[in-house]
Length: 328
Image (cartoon, rainbow, N blue to C red):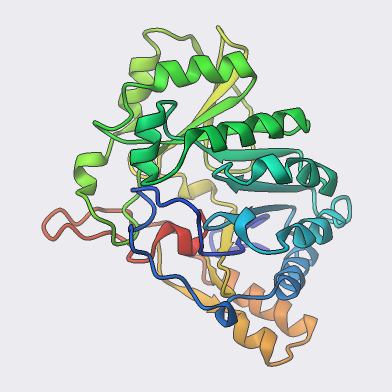
């Protein structure tokens, strides 16, 4: 799959649910309304669509949500997709908030998952509860260490927010080094209608990196995971730190990914509204050839890049849909 700008599309992020058991302040409104079950693709429909992408050259699948591990029977999907590793698919991964990992980590490893991303924006228990609105950090930490015990490589994802958690990144980097985890910091993105002023939360990661260099030796590396993060080796810990910078330096020129929502809508760009509807096709009895043709047509419309600009005059997000809808 080659888009209009010559980029090879090999990475599909798949949201299996819009639901989550947390309400992180940068991701969801506190009183979220979730989709009825009939609107969601079944696990079988998700598998069939993923199989079509794999036939067309997708080599990496990331399962996301919402919180993917709250989807009932989701491990059946992991098992089915994991069986395709080595048959076109090279990697199956998952992004999770960690709350359900304690009971699913071993099954994920058995299905072929080798590494996971866990969202953890703070190590402070009280701050964690405030940022997630009702979460308990102990549950997420138990999940993280269950994943480590199951042999999964763990990367910690933290959204950097000015005046919220910017005082913690030295401690988080040290903690990740102690336990053998990589750390990835992410700039907050103007998506979804949530309470709070995003302009107050936005923290350029160029500033964060400069601050970290006062304590840590960050060395250039060629390490890549197929995603948008730029990584550095941390000499003092032997681990890595990554920076995802959609605002200060977009990574559109090398974009290799598209996103499928739990309703079967394909977004060719996270920061654009153009999409393709696959639920209607699937439920109309489309053949595999028709699905593949529709995928190719959608890829042919992939834009050059996103338009993440916060509307400071009207305090509006650049993209109205929540991150949890698109796939975190």
